[in-house]
Length: 291
Image (tube, rainbow, N blue to C red; front, side, top):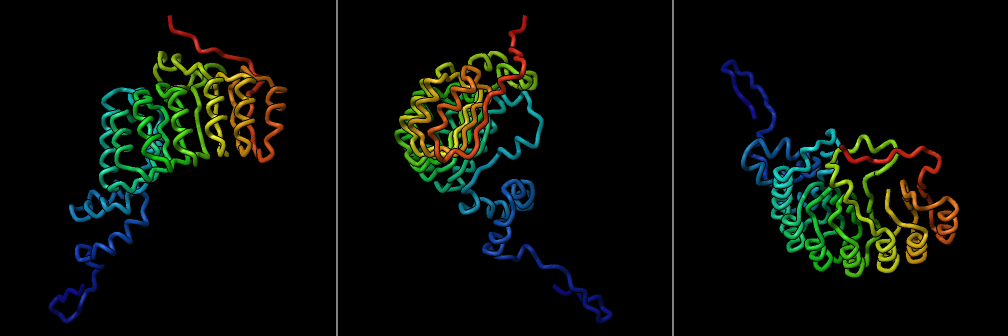
């Protein structure tokens, strides 16, 4: 654009962004991260906001990087915060028009996950750690309607039971990554957990049953995390027998296992590249109930 100032000189300004085509805007916005679009173009004008709602820009919903950029807060565990996360997730589901393939979020509930299951059959990655109000009800819908799931993180989501893991394993044959970590109940990390104490103490206690389900129904797993799980050598034997393709195994904090038991069980895993074992030498600090 040129502006003439009477003396004959023309001043050339930058491009008129308002005149850019939707195709140009899409090309530019696609080069931004999701968070950059939320904090920038979506706040400029209605046209830009609508362009950011384009389905092709909303195939991935990742709040995990946002959560990691802030200190943990006990306020994340209250219903009002969960309502906000649910509303945000439902909006992205609508914008994607069913094309959502990856979700990484915390503190959502059955309400938004059921919405995902009904509308996003192409879902491949689902991270829903620290979700106290996600239950087997919504996970059953995910298992039935999202058969392409290949990566699942249900760490610290204690209302998801071994029955849900069984359904997911039977209906999602492409699962290669499973994270089922529990909060530490001993060791130096106990003091830095930010979560309600009664919730931490309600941890899943069926470690061997879950391990047997993993070994029976998730044979393609390559990456498995079971931090602070209650499994014993019986459960680990089931995992190593059924998941022979494992390349990564995290058993940090699994104090019901001994070093010799772990060594013996994993000796059959020919593709194993990395294993994390419990610290057998560190003094144990037990999580205590307040008086």
